[in-house]
Each structure stands twice: as C-alpha cells, then as structure tokens.
Length: 264
Image (tube, rainbow, N blue to C red; front, top):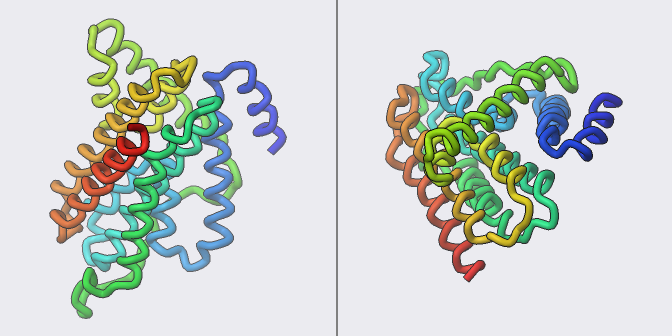
C-alpha cells in the first residue's frame, strides 16, 4: 500500500506513469471483491474480475476452453457480459483519472454501455428463457485468477509494460505509416481498448475538440465490438451466437445514439 501511494505521488509529476498505479488499484479492488463476495467462486464473478485484466482473455477462455463446453448457456452469457462491464468500468476509471476537467459527455459512451449490459445481466439472471435443458451440466467452473495477494506487482509490471508497448505501437502506426488517427485507433483497439484510451487521453491537452474525442471513443468501442463478434462467431461453447452478437451491437449503437443526442 505504501508503494502504491508513492506511485500516485510520482504519477502526479509524470502523467504517463498514471496508468501503473491505476492498474495496481484495480488489482487491489479485484482482490477485495474476490474475497468479500466470491466465497462460492461463481463463474460470473470470475469473469467480471478477469475483465479488469483482459476481457479478451476471458472471451477466449470461456468461449473455447473444453472445460466450459457443458456449462449452462445462461451462465456463459452472463460471464461474457460481466467481462464487458468490467472493461467499460475500467475505461471510466481511465477517463476520470487521466482526463482533467473532462465534460460529462466523455463518460457517456462507457456509462451507457455499462448500464445497458447490467440491465441485460439482471434480466438474464431472473429470466429462464435463456436457460439450457435441465439435463445439461450446470456446474460452475472457476476462471483461474491470482488473488492470493492484494497486489501482485509482477503482474502489474507486465501489464503496464504491455500497455506502454501498445501505446508506442499506436504512435508508430500513426506517425511512420501515415495512418490516420481513426484507423490506427481502430486497429489497436481490436486487441486492447484500455491502452488506446489511455494513449488518447495522455495526448489530449484540452477538452476543446470534444466531438472529435467522442468519435475516437466510439472508434475504440467499435474495435472492441468487432473483435468480440469475431470471438463469438468462432466460439465452440456458446450456442446462441446471433442473440449475443445482437446485444453487443445494440449496446454500441444505443450508446452512440444517446451520446449524439446529448452533445447536439
């Protein structure tokens, strides 16, 4: 905890380093959430916590690992949606932490998607229309997470280095290959949304170009939706692929429409 406090102090003088204590704080949050709420170690909670680290990794594991093949379809869908919720929550943290005096519109693209996915999660948790036949094995299987210590600094360092490399790659693509900012943002966000968002906010000195920044935010969310759609289409374990993909795009298009109406 003392080291985390020191990192926050250092980051106040070196803005680019703010992402390091942010990652450590999210891991600390995951640790306490796991131990306070995760006694049953339900698949959904593990998916949510895994989403803070990498929603892509959660999708690849849950959708394709044979050990989840006989899992309840409703459980799988909720797990995948909660991983997305964790991703947009982390995006909200990044906007709050890296963007000073950000207007409310900066939070809308992520907050609206979070609200939509949470409503769907609540519905799926209560409804039985998404359930699979009773003969199917509904055992809950844990996603393996390292939550035995509040902050695992080795993991924080690895993830921070990875994000910095992705940010550097984004600069390289935009500068050396003369690719437009929107195209480079879309390309990198197919693999990692958080690093692109952090890169955009650390490069932005003001909130004057609000509409342009919002456009880039939705380019990031578009890249995330495209990659998740690809993973679902290639999935072995999820049966209702069309329905889940429809939810992904409904959340994106709905948040875009509401944000546009708010700004205009």
